[in-house]
Image (tube, rainbow, N blue to C red; front, side, top):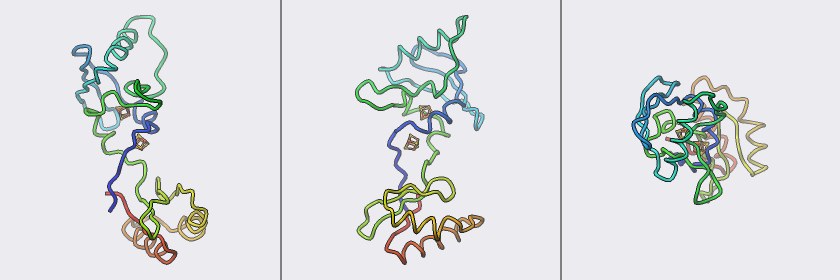
Length: 169
Ligand code: SF4
Ligand code: SF4
């Protein structure tokens, strides 16, 4: 089994994050928020680096005229120290974010190098043209009704062609 590793690219935060609402501000770093997807309240502690901008936005949103609606998670921020995006509440992010897996299987070469990822039910992301052809020709159409049987079936087909399937925990 592979251990899921989030590289914090922030791609999922557009959809997941729109379902997070601020319920109450406790101070300029701490909030009670609601995760609408599982209807749970969680405590969010903002990284000190992003405290001011998030607190300012919160104030603007609650003072008429209200600002534009957010198109992504309010806690997704431009990384002050780099070029990417960061979650400003990463250590206290809600369960839906912690549990989210954007891929559910890794595919490895004989040597163990990762050469593909399976996302959704049976879509592959790979730069390996032979693997892509194999997947689309022999794997993609396999019914997913029984997940354990699917994994066994797919593992066998990949193994015949020198690949190893590694489902994510
Ligand atoms: S779960 Fe996946 S899509 Fe979301 S931030 Fe992590 S690596 Fe990116
Ligand atoms: S709380 Fe963090 S991990 Fe969750 S959607 Fe927002 S930015 Fe992404």
